[in-house]
Length: 224
Image (cartoon, rainbow, N blue to C red):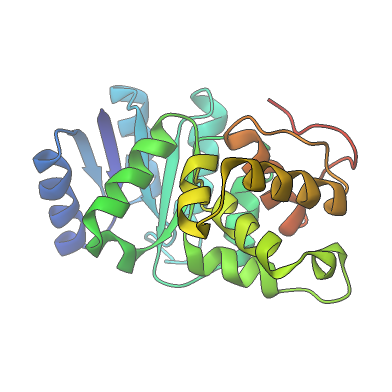
Protein backbone atom coordinates (compact mmCIF):
# COMPACT_ATOMS: atom_id res chain seq x y z
CA UNK A 1 0.00 0.00 0.00
CA UNK A 2 1.53 3.31 -1.15
CA UNK A 3 0.96 6.29 1.17
CA UNK A 4 1.50 10.04 0.93
CA UNK A 5 1.61 11.96 4.21
CA UNK A 6 0.81 15.66 4.73
CA UNK A 7 1.95 16.60 8.24
CA UNK A 8 4.06 19.63 9.23
CA UNK A 9 5.10 18.25 12.64
CA UNK A 10 8.43 16.60 11.84
CA UNK A 11 8.41 14.29 14.86
CA UNK A 12 4.91 13.03 14.09
CA UNK A 13 5.54 12.62 10.36
CA UNK A 14 8.79 10.75 11.03
CA UNK A 15 7.04 8.50 13.52
CA UNK A 16 4.27 7.80 11.03
CA UNK A 17 6.80 6.99 8.34
CA UNK A 18 8.61 4.49 10.57
CA UNK A 19 5.37 2.93 11.80
CA UNK A 20 3.97 2.48 8.30
CA UNK A 21 7.21 1.06 6.96
CA UNK A 22 7.25 -1.46 9.82
CA UNK A 23 3.73 -2.52 8.81
CA UNK A 24 4.70 -3.14 5.20
CA UNK A 25 3.45 0.14 3.71
CA UNK A 26 5.42 2.20 1.20
CA UNK A 27 5.61 5.88 2.16
CA UNK A 28 6.00 7.55 -1.21
CA UNK A 29 6.31 11.11 0.11
CA UNK A 30 6.08 13.18 3.29
CA UNK A 31 5.01 16.79 2.79
CA UNK A 32 4.52 19.76 5.08
CA UNK A 33 1.93 21.89 3.28
CA UNK A 34 -1.10 21.59 1.03
CA UNK A 35 0.53 22.48 -2.29
CA UNK A 36 3.43 20.07 -1.79
CA UNK A 37 0.90 17.40 -0.83
CA UNK A 38 -1.08 17.89 -4.04
CA UNK A 39 2.10 17.73 -6.10
CA UNK A 40 3.11 14.49 -4.34
CA UNK A 41 -0.31 12.92 -4.93
CA UNK A 42 -0.11 13.79 -8.64
CA UNK A 43 3.41 12.40 -8.89
CA UNK A 44 3.00 9.18 -6.87
CA UNK A 45 -0.72 8.29 -7.22
CA UNK A 46 -0.90 6.75 -3.74
CA UNK A 47 -3.43 4.20 -2.53
CA UNK A 48 -4.25 6.45 0.42
CA UNK A 49 -3.20 9.82 1.86
CA UNK A 50 -2.83 10.77 5.51
CA UNK A 51 -3.54 14.47 6.00
CA UNK A 52 -3.38 16.80 8.99
CA UNK A 53 -6.33 19.18 9.24
CA UNK A 54 -4.15 22.23 9.91
CA UNK A 55 -1.18 22.92 7.68
CA UNK A 56 0.95 25.99 6.87
CA UNK A 57 0.72 28.84 6.24
CA UNK A 58 -2.30 29.72 8.43
CA UNK A 59 -2.74 26.40 10.27
CA UNK A 60 -6.53 26.59 9.94
CA UNK A 61 -8.04 24.27 7.34
CA UNK A 62 -5.45 23.97 4.57
CA UNK A 63 -5.22 20.22 5.04
CA UNK A 64 -8.96 19.68 4.60
CA UNK A 65 -9.09 21.81 1.46
CA UNK A 66 -6.09 20.00 0.01
CA UNK A 67 -7.72 16.64 0.81
CA UNK A 68 -10.99 17.67 -0.87
CA UNK A 69 -9.14 18.90 -3.95
CA UNK A 70 -7.12 15.66 -4.13
CA UNK A 71 -10.36 13.65 -4.03
CA UNK A 72 -11.87 15.75 -6.83
CA UNK A 73 -8.81 15.50 -9.03
CA UNK A 74 -7.77 11.90 -8.38
CA UNK A 75 -10.88 9.71 -8.43
CA UNK A 76 -12.03 9.90 -4.82
CA UNK A 77 -8.57 9.23 -3.42
CA UNK A 78 -8.95 7.55 0.01
CA UNK A 79 -8.09 10.06 2.72
CA UNK A 80 -7.38 9.49 6.40
CA UNK A 81 -7.54 12.84 8.18
CA UNK A 82 -5.74 13.40 11.48
CA UNK A 83 -6.77 16.11 13.91
CA UNK A 84 -5.72 17.23 17.37
CA UNK A 85 -9.33 17.93 18.35
CA UNK A 86 -12.83 17.01 17.22
CA UNK A 87 -13.81 19.52 14.54
CA UNK A 88 -17.30 18.55 13.39
CA UNK A 89 -17.54 20.93 10.47
CA UNK A 90 -14.48 19.40 8.83
CA UNK A 91 -15.78 15.86 9.30
CA UNK A 92 -19.03 16.92 7.69
CA UNK A 93 -17.26 18.60 4.79
CA UNK A 94 -15.39 15.41 3.97
CA UNK A 95 -18.49 13.25 4.24
CA UNK A 96 -20.73 15.51 2.18
CA UNK A 97 -19.72 14.05 -1.19
CA UNK A 98 -21.38 10.76 -0.22
CA UNK A 99 -18.44 8.59 -1.24
CA UNK A 100 -16.40 6.11 0.79
CA UNK A 101 -12.69 6.00 1.45
CA UNK A 102 -12.81 8.54 4.27
CA UNK A 103 -11.37 8.40 7.77
CA UNK A 104 -11.25 10.99 10.53
CA UNK A 105 -9.13 10.14 13.57
CA UNK A 106 -7.75 12.06 16.49
CA UNK A 107 -3.97 12.03 16.59
CA UNK A 108 -4.00 10.24 19.94
CA UNK A 109 -5.41 7.23 18.11
CA UNK A 110 -2.06 6.66 16.37
CA UNK A 111 -0.67 5.35 19.64
CA UNK A 112 -3.11 2.43 19.41
CA UNK A 113 -1.16 0.94 16.56
CA UNK A 114 -3.37 -2.00 15.66
CA UNK A 115 -6.50 0.18 15.63
CA UNK A 116 -4.78 2.84 13.56
CA UNK A 117 -3.46 0.40 10.96
CA UNK A 118 -6.84 -1.32 10.78
CA UNK A 119 -8.51 2.04 10.13
CA UNK A 120 -5.92 2.92 7.49
CA UNK A 121 -6.48 -0.33 5.61
CA UNK A 122 -10.25 -0.02 5.86
CA UNK A 123 -10.21 3.47 4.37
CA UNK A 124 -7.77 2.44 1.63
CA UNK A 125 -10.24 -0.31 0.68
CA UNK A 126 -13.02 2.27 0.27
CA UNK A 127 -14.51 2.00 3.74
CA UNK A 128 -15.03 4.52 6.50
CA UNK A 129 -13.25 4.97 9.83
CA UNK A 130 -14.48 7.62 12.23
CA UNK A 131 -12.92 8.28 15.61
CA UNK A 132 -15.27 7.17 18.41
CA UNK A 133 -15.04 10.64 19.95
CA UNK A 134 -16.16 12.25 16.69
CA UNK A 135 -19.08 9.83 16.49
CA UNK A 136 -20.03 10.54 20.10
CA UNK A 137 -20.19 14.27 19.44
CA UNK A 138 -22.21 13.79 16.26
CA UNK A 139 -24.70 11.63 18.12
CA UNK A 140 -25.02 14.14 20.95
CA UNK A 141 -24.97 17.37 18.98
CA UNK A 142 -28.71 17.87 18.46
CA UNK A 143 -31.97 17.61 20.36
CA UNK A 144 -35.51 17.03 19.22
CA UNK A 145 -34.64 15.01 16.13
CA UNK A 146 -35.15 11.42 14.95
CA UNK A 147 -32.06 10.26 16.85
CA UNK A 148 -34.10 10.71 20.02
CA UNK A 149 -36.31 7.83 18.91
CA UNK A 150 -33.45 5.31 18.90
CA UNK A 151 -33.16 2.88 21.77
CA UNK A 152 -29.86 2.74 23.71
CA UNK A 153 -28.91 -0.48 21.90
CA UNK A 154 -29.74 1.06 18.50
CA UNK A 155 -27.56 4.06 19.34
CA UNK A 156 -24.75 1.70 20.32
CA UNK A 157 -25.10 -0.13 17.01
CA UNK A 158 -25.20 3.17 15.12
CA UNK A 159 -22.00 4.36 16.79
CA UNK A 160 -20.21 1.14 15.86
CA UNK A 161 -21.52 1.38 12.28
CA UNK A 162 -20.26 4.94 12.04
CA UNK A 163 -16.80 3.84 13.14
CA UNK A 164 -16.75 1.52 10.12
CA UNK A 165 -17.27 -1.85 11.79
CA UNK A 166 -19.00 -4.67 9.93
CA UNK A 167 -21.94 -6.66 11.26
CA UNK A 168 -19.79 -9.47 12.64
CA UNK A 169 -17.70 -7.05 14.69
CA UNK A 170 -20.79 -5.19 15.88
CA UNK A 171 -22.33 -8.48 17.01
CA UNK A 172 -19.16 -9.40 18.89
CA UNK A 173 -18.84 -6.03 20.61
CA UNK A 174 -22.51 -5.87 21.56
CA UNK A 175 -22.55 -9.60 22.45
CA UNK A 176 -25.62 -10.27 20.35
CA UNK A 177 -26.42 -12.43 17.33
CA UNK A 178 -25.98 -11.42 13.70
CA UNK A 179 -29.76 -11.48 13.30
CA UNK A 180 -30.13 -9.04 16.17
CA UNK A 181 -27.63 -6.72 14.47
CA UNK A 182 -29.63 -6.84 11.23
CA UNK A 183 -32.77 -5.99 13.18
CA UNK A 184 -31.13 -3.02 14.89
CA UNK A 185 -29.83 -1.72 11.56
CA UNK A 186 -33.26 -2.03 9.96
CA UNK A 187 -34.82 -0.13 12.86
CA UNK A 188 -32.17 2.59 12.68
CA UNK A 189 -32.70 3.24 8.98
CA UNK A 190 -36.47 3.19 9.36
CA UNK A 191 -36.41 5.70 12.24
CA UNK A 192 -33.97 8.01 10.45
CA UNK A 193 -35.95 7.89 7.21
CA UNK A 194 -33.07 6.34 5.27
CA UNK A 195 -33.41 3.48 2.79
CA UNK A 196 -32.25 0.15 4.30
CA UNK A 197 -28.83 -0.66 2.90
CA UNK A 198 -26.75 -3.29 4.64
CA UNK A 199 -23.87 -3.35 2.15
CA UNK A 200 -20.73 -2.12 3.87
CA UNK A 201 -19.57 1.48 3.93
CA UNK A 202 -22.56 2.88 1.99
CA UNK A 203 -24.74 2.47 5.08
CA UNK A 204 -22.14 4.24 7.21
CA UNK A 205 -21.94 7.15 4.76
CA UNK A 206 -25.72 7.45 4.74
CA UNK A 207 -25.92 7.52 8.54
CA UNK A 208 -23.05 9.96 8.93
CA UNK A 209 -24.43 12.20 6.18
CA UNK A 210 -27.69 12.31 8.09
CA UNK A 211 -26.02 12.97 11.44
CA UNK A 212 -23.84 15.75 10.11
CA UNK A 213 -26.56 17.45 8.09
CA UNK A 214 -25.07 16.71 4.68
CA UNK A 215 -27.44 16.80 1.70
CA UNK A 216 -29.60 13.70 1.47
CA UNK A 217 -32.95 12.49 0.22
CA UNK A 218 -35.03 10.60 2.74
CA UNK A 219 -36.21 7.21 1.70
CA UNK A 220 -33.62 6.89 -1.10
CA UNK A 221 -30.32 5.03 -0.95
CA UNK A 222 -27.06 6.89 -0.57
CA UNK A 223 -25.01 7.38 -3.73
CA UNK A 224 -22.72 4.49 -4.59
